[in-house]
Length: 423
Image (cartoon, rainbow, N blue to C red; front, side):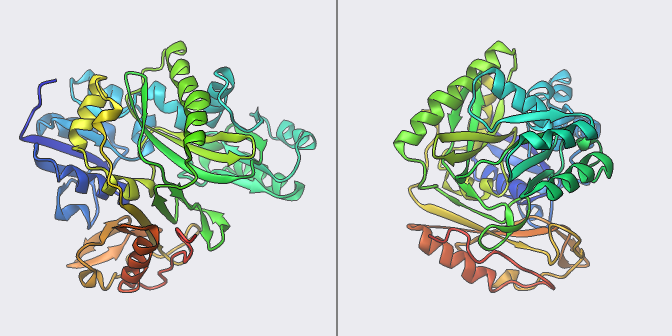
């Protein structure tokens, strides 16, 4: 592989994951210019923000051609599912992203479950339904609690855990009749509720070779002690001590190797990041979900621990030449805590002024999620607003420092979980 220097890079997206990607890419000696579309108040300090929305793939492609972008890196799922990789490749533009066919692993829960079933990948028992009445009738054959999922993309909120039949009936109605998640609710998956410890594994996939990154744990429920509604993620830490050598071996032989075989059999050409959501049950690891991109907030704790050049990793992944020996990791541990807007993940206010960002410690990484600059002030634009990240020699020290810095920041209604990475 000929190493290109003076590279011009475009990062697509506007969240803390994209801020972390821009920050990591900016450390590469090979890069001279970074654009972020549309970006946020954090990315604009190290990249040039471009006023193109992440789902406007035609305009992004046009921009990449005009600006002679050497590599595009895609953060969020919607452009992936809409086929941004296919469009860029048609225009001979290099892109780090799985194609539309591969992106169905995230774009359709039904596609993902059928892929797992076909290739003997351990997952929860399930059934799929396109008719409301059939879904309701099937509840008799499931034990409670159970899980009901909208088939399509629902911004991480289309998964409902139902503890009894009334809750299940309400969930089916919300998804299939009220269409709370729009077309994502045309088909649903009803599946058994898995008990255990949830964990996440991010992997680079290069020429059907799956290379895991360091482990992490995500906290989805909004409240301390994992109570309340599911969110896009309220915090994370890495590494996750649950990953013992025995568990890693089981995940490799029963999950990763079978995914690889499945890609080959189903002729899925996957190049990019595969995120595997796992439940560690008494019977071993089972797959909860696949995402086809960097997870958020896992990216914010994993990338600071990566010591290799991320741009080179991206290129080798695309070329099919990436090996696990290309990835070097810091022994330090990392914690991310999300500061969110009051009311999230339901209704919340936007445009609130954020104070205290200039008071943060020099060694803390404050990745911006939902922020922008208005009249010289940094204001909120989303439910998840900041991802306060710290690396230290222990989880305890990283955790303490992240929380100390969160206390220096404020905006109206700001809240965060107090138990992220608590032993």
